[in-house]
Image (cartoon, rainbow, N blue to C red; front, side, top):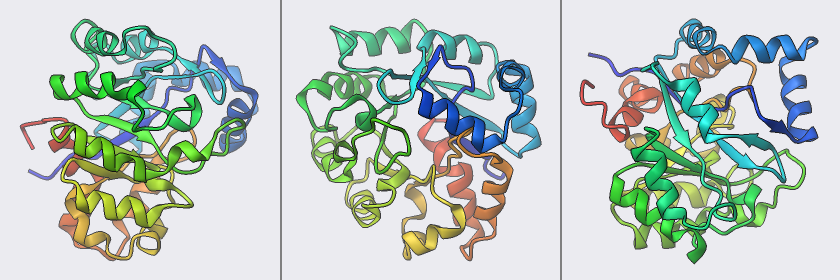
Length: 279
């Protein structure tokens, strides 16, 4: 059985609150004239699942976001409800370490009571270094529960983002201190630190490259030896920051890589991390 196509990085189009720069970016990216109608359409989980089907996606990771300074608020409660009862939509929670008193307890609640399958953290948006002690209770609980944690690295177009928190080098500490924790470097140090992201993912068995937000046709320009790291690369679209998931998938399929490698990138590796035992 061939591996499924898994988009590991999807944001709901509905946010309780967008910052102006984030809302304007999404509107322009989709050339949306009727923004309320666009939001209404893709806030329907059945409609969105059909959209994934039309784009050749079997499963999608749907991300909560608690970044009031830079992008906005999409609550864990909203994502949980959006994905409820739909096996193809896999919810990942957000924990902003500045917004909770007991970060480890919050992770446990999100996983055990609300059914989240992983976490997405936003260092460059929430202003913390990935290796700060502030974040370690989150990692410790995620490691205990056996769920993956993905963190934003590299650049961002949104006003207020601070790139200094997005250097992949900070993952060296985290990967060493939590050897059983699956970590994903979202955007792979986009723009500034591709070599670091690649080297670190080769160095640490628990550290993965998530290539969301990078033009797929340029992956071999950014990572000339990508084939050697075939088991450590995860595909994501960053929808709605991209207009077409399908075109990104097609661009990956067009790369001069082994078919086995492309299958791993587009879903095989993600299925393994998510413990989808049927693949």
